[in-house]
Image 1 (cartoon, rainbow, N blue to C red):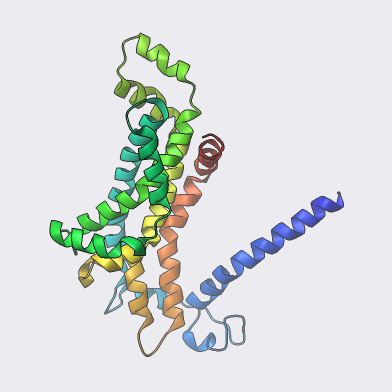
Image 2: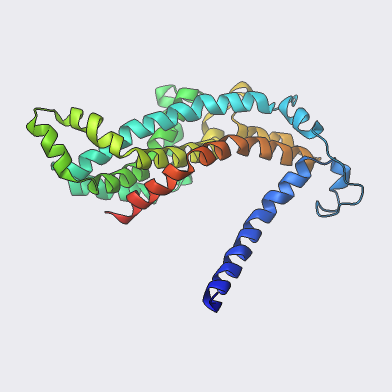
Length: 275
């Protein structure tokens, strides 16, 4: 084996170990009693396993993670589906059709992608209050959908550009409408890219904290990312409980990513190279 390949492998393994160490630390802290990790999770004297931490956070008296998970699912799924539908139609329009102000609108989309959530916090709060959507799941769903549209539309637009137009022209000759062409030809071809956007939007929405904190105020509507700080406590921090809640929270997006990993890689390659 060449020395250059050996060096690449060493660097790759080193980066991988650095990235996985925090996860191992959280895992070890979640499956051990708090008294065993006070001096650090890497101390294994008197090592014992327990699931008590998971049971406590699942039925936590102040912020039960069981309720937070259901709330997150009820918000993340609609926000992801809406983003996919709107972004795929918008991305296809930017990739194929000519209309007035197309370049200007696309430039605005790029600009919006550079904005931070904190920059729109005040106007967003006033708008949600004006529409009566403050402290509602619908309000948070609309915010997540709107915030995920710019990059999703850009990603899918780049993928649609790579689709040969000859496939669409043959269908149009047979009398198919633009919507029929998109629904029966283009959208099935774009499945890897669509699933990639779905994975990224799902994970981002699942892990998002700022907008949820801004809009949802009632404890019965809190999502998982709002529950974890309350489990942490104000005066006493049981890191075993915090670690257990973090492990439970990451299970759902991890399963989604593992199941759709091959589509994600194909979609990223197709959506990022073209454009």
